[in-house]
Length: 463
Image (tube, rainbow, N blue to C red; front, side, top):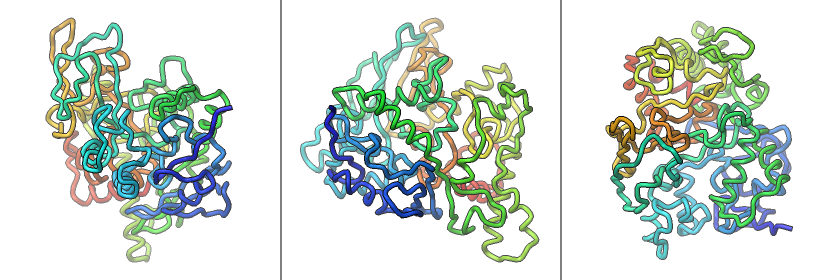
């Protein structure tokens, strides 16, 4: 029998029996009991809720158990109060509470460099700066066999010395909620090879994370993998209360996790490029959550009415504001079109969810050298056939497939529950949702007015 250690969530060590109470210190259960199926957590934009009809706080599930050698569990990097990922604020609290000894602070992947010096408090503060400032975990990736490119050089602010046969990339842990809507597992899709189902990819991901992040000496049993994935697939998270607009399920609104749990989904649903297996045409009005609030504009209600109509306007902008999609590797080049007339929902097409309903890793320029910040490395890659050089802070999916055209490509995440999990994008590039809106406005010359930016931000915060 495998020895089950204490689950560790926010401090160095707690008993499994204390886990449910610990998860609730930042929020509350809507229904009482250790198997409560609805949890609520406050955030800067209001209140996020998670719904799982089978229950959430079950400490017997291996998701909450330390099954490795370094004290980590799945919950270590997937906190319910932080949108089932981690946030810099949450990581900083854990550092302060544990003097940097919480299991999340491990040098196999939590530090800027593997095996960093952590002998003193000051050394630990220096070793984990990306985890503390952006919530980034280091992923070490070897060059794939037969790659069409080589790493020519690396400008590494941490001087990790990984050489030219591997890359250290720094990425946000993806949420383990709303997984029922996935079309690919992991930012670079490395757990979603061809002809592998999402469920199979999640099973592999659970095992690989335990062996890697938790440094387990034994692989998970089939039963443990199944329990983790069953738990994760039941989680649905969404904003339920907006600080300005109040309840997002009132006056005909369909916000919150319970309606989300009933949202239909299949691979290819509403795909704009003809990959919907039902043959149904693409509907750019992919979001309908707040349709009923559009008619509130002429109704009385003061502040609440104003906030709700702003969210409804933001939804309309997301669905219909024209975007000229240019220079997006994975879309323009695959279609052979230098310019594509679209909207936000061209890429965020899954109805009322917002991710892409088929595998579609894209490069929107987040890793380009002009957007590099001083705390990230810069890789210079050379195409072996053409000699072309390309610089990037993260080669993205190319480190999985070895294909030159996939440098810098990543999948888009599920958009529900955004308000709980800043910062945004794979590398934490955008600190706030306002920053996300400004990035897209600039990147695609959307020419949004200040009011339109505010409305679009209000909508994203309400997801």
